Every structure is written in C-alpha cells, then in structure tokens.
Length: 348
Ligand code: SF4
Ligand code: SF4
Image (cartoon, rainbow, N blue to C red; front, side, top):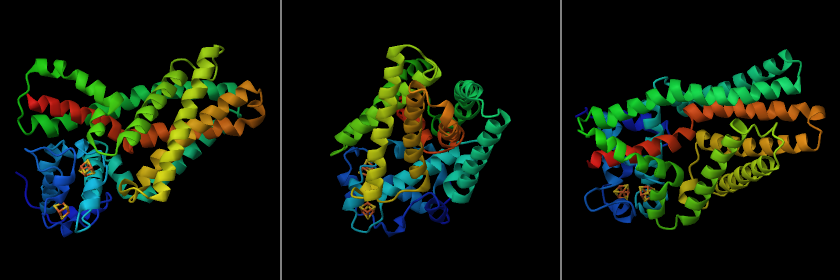
C-alpha cells in the first residue's frame, strides 16, 4: 500500500488532467461507462486513487488502459471533473513510469524538450543529406536500412525492457500468481487486441471511431510492411506499387479526419488535446502523404529534380521512429494490447 501523496494531482496535471479534485463521488461516471461492470467501480476507482495519490496502486492497475475515451463519463459528470481526461492522463503517466529511459515523461511534460528533439533530428537528417551530397540513391538506400534497423533497435532497447517493467508493476509486484500455460494460452488476446482493439466496440456510439482506428492500424502496419519488407520505393512489381499507394492514402485520409475532429472539438474526447496528440496525428498524416508523394514522383520520374521531397519524408520518418514511436502516443497502442493480455492473465 503506497502513501497518500497530495502532490500527485499537480504532477498529473502536467500530463493533461483537469481539476479532478472537484469530484464528489456521486458515481455518475461509473453508472454511465459502458465498460464498467458490477464488480468494479470503473472509472471512479481511478479517480479515488488519483485524488489520494496512491501511485503504487495506479502503477499496478491495468484499468486506465481499459478505457477507450468515449467521453461519456465526462459529459455526465456534474462537477466537470473530466474523468475521461483523467484516464487519458493516467495512461500518459503510466507510459512515463514504464519507460526506463525517462524520455517519455520528459516529452509529455515539456513541450520545449519535444521541440528540441524534433529540431535535432531534422538537423541530423540535413547533415546526413549534405554529407551524402544529396545523392538520391544513397539517401534512399540508407532510408530503407534505417527503417529496418530502427524497428529492431527500438524493440530490443526500449520496448522489451518497458514491457518487462509493466509486467513487473502489474503482475509480479502485486504477487499475482499466473501459471505458465496461461501465458501461452492467453497470447491470442494480445494479438486480437493489437489488431482489432475489440473492447472499444463495447462503448456506445463508438463504432465509427473504432472502424476508423481499425482501418488506420491496418493501413499503418501494411505501409510499414510494404516499405520495409517489400522495398516499395524501389519495387518494380505492379501489385506492390499499387498496394503501397492504397495503404499510404488510407493513412493520410484517415488522419485528416482525426486532425479535423481535434480542431472542431465537437466530441468530448477531442476537447482536450495535448501536444503529444497533435504530434501523433500530424506526423502520421505527413508520413502517409510524403510516402505517397515520393513514390508518385518516382513513377513520374521527377524525384531527382525534387530531392527535397525525399529529405522531408526521411525527416518525418526519423522523427516518427525515434521520437513518437518509442516515447510518444504510439506506445499506447502497444501498452494497451499488453494490458488486455495481462488482464487476461490476472483473471487466472
Ligand atoms: S461523475 Fe464526476 S463527480 Fe461523480 S464520481 Fe464521477 S468524476 Fe466524481
Ligand atoms: S471515457 Fe468512456 S470508456 Fe473511458 S471511463 Fe469514461 S465512459 Fe468509460
């Protein structure tokens, strides 16, 4: 049992939480939430932990990952305590706690730190391009290698240790006993959640949003596969070329709608956007768009005269791979999938 920490609310506000101390425990949010069950007071339990600053209990909990931020609880809260936004900020806070490098927390809490990271990577790519005399063939070769190396390195150096830390906080430290065969038999839950995020379908009025996310995940993973494993920019196979166009177009079209929704703020879930939310959707949009344009310029045979486009695409790619994927909102996709898997283990 951790100690009461009244400073926790101030800390959580740096991750985007509103003034949840206004909560007077009426229970409307629990009654409203479609994901709440009779044996859990979700999300009220997390509001209580947060109010008391029970950090160990929050770290041991998988509940923040069960919330898909439909925003219903915030709409129904009579005290404007914004429970939906609290759950979102808890996910950011947990992400920072899982991350052994401490960079996730730094990026979430400090916009100047994030901007510095983006500027440094931009300068790094420019320096590389100058060093390579803007030789397009060489830059594209390195760009292709970079994708494969970045995926493997981030997986090994950042994600594996962070997932082990998450497992430690949520399973090992609370002394949850899980038979080994359960780890194996529950793996299906992990993959199904990762690809479908099916639990979001339990939220009322969430089906179109779920569908958009589903299409985006499939489009993004397909684009990754096409560029890394099928070498889309160099491929001569018609199927690969057309497939790359389709999946990159899916990525930027869906993200346009996400950016639009955040700007219009019509839905509760879009009313509070943190810089990390903007970085995620804008960089994903830019990645899809610049990849599409690069391949189009290759097919029109005008990329050599427009090398700036590949430099721009490479910059977006490097910033995406080194900042947003390991330390930004992308990690929610990974941690949520593991959270559902760990929740299944805990059922044992
Ligand atoms: S609806 Fe608002 S005031 Fe009521 S328990 Fe939930 S957060 Fe607290
Ligand atoms: S945002 Fe939606 S899913 Fe999350 S706690 Fe509130 S009502 Fe439940």
